[in-house]
Length: 375
Image (cartoon, rainbow, N blue to C red):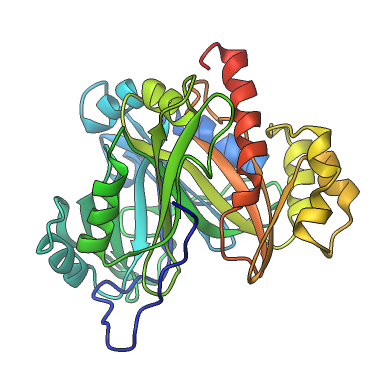
């Protein structure tokens, strides 16, 4: 199978689940207060909102961070029992909720559940003096869920149940803009069933496909399909392992996460060199790329606006498609378990996902796996 771009929808097709982007990404973490300090310090997020015992919530504490259009929610259980504690015990820190902006959360629930979506949150309306937020939700792969958020009638800081979180510690943003895409890792032979889920239940399209000929090294391989909603604002690549001589990065993730889940969150920036320089100065660790990657890179991708030397120094990857080029870099896992990491991406017209970088990227990942004894 070669990489393919599928046809765009015709005018007669109706998007039954119009999405306006990612509303927030919620992590279940072992210590939300400390995790919030990390994401403020290292990633440049700003304090936005808080919910916990002081706001009448008895079972959890949640800190909401923001940078431009991206909201991050960090939630910790306050007791050793319950779903959040069980999620942490099994998976460690990781993504629980990929929340999506909708015009009508009740209709989104009806459209998806009648098409086979498994209910997670029944439609509900939260209210306070600032208006109302309507929510609903369905399950997706593993223990990950989608929550549909309708906030057009709300003027508060985040949603009812939260209060503004004022802090004297506010490091400058680093230039992160919004969620570009979120990648899920699923088990052996599970990619196509989840592709069908996104097609049937949520009306997504498979816009790109990669097989083990596209994404492989001497030792390992995987397969991936990119799912996109109608307007392209929400993209969910889905990975599954493929046969190789040794354990792939997806297998390592599944072993340590103990199930399917979000592998990485890609965040857009308009100036990747500035963003990554600031993140490195704040202690974020990125994968290292061999020097020989840069020896012939411009022969492969053609001319770019940026000077090559700063990209080389930072280990930023470059790729081109028919619409332009992109610059991307990947952090090392941000927890002790080798599970979730982040991608920083700058698109200069390109709408693809860096196929030309797969070999260099996966060899870098394998070096890290080998250091951990997991290759």
